[in-house]
Image (cartoon, rainbow, N blue to C red; front, side, top):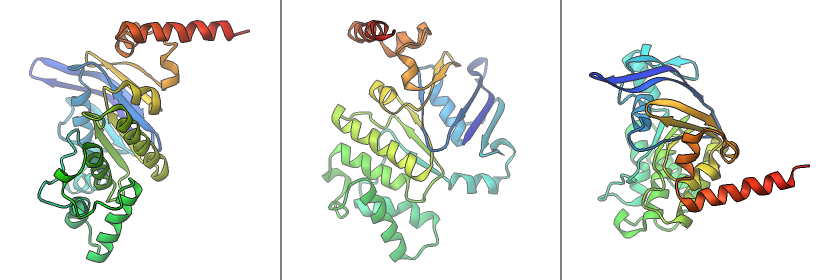
Length: 259
């Protein structure tokens, strides 16, 4: 579990995050959504330590990140997995070598055990016959799955995902969503996903935080969105006339079905 308490972040005179408090739960897919420029990327950068908040506290299972020693911060970062928007695989390494990279860097396992662990992770994301290929030889969806395998290689407690479905077709995006959701539940990971993908929001949004102009505007689960009376949220989620009409039809049907 990650808890943030009254987080604010300013750059000079510009306040980007404004007194945000929230809890990101273990074993659930926690989504951060909001318009471009709303502050959600800055929030994630504060969570992983790339930025430091101007005010407030970030607690990892009760451990205050801001008061940790440098050594403890290094140890905590080893408990984090990262899934980048571009996958960020090493072009000069094979699929297997990419997944082994964090194991080579941060574990004391033998080569045999590191190789076994990497193959276990590749098997978990349903890649079993491409370990000797290079990233340029596989599809974008497969690259994303390799990146997920690499992100979980060190068995992280916390997994951060930046736009994991960016550039993927809708069908492949659903595969990635299912993988992230399944892995989160299976290993009881605190997964935080920064996303614009409304299919992800409605499909795997077990804990959703909507950021609007640097403030936490709304928090809930995907099932709550359809009937939410928060206009800023619904205008963001149901931006097109087609989605607005679909929402209206669903709400009308629900009213008809109620006794």
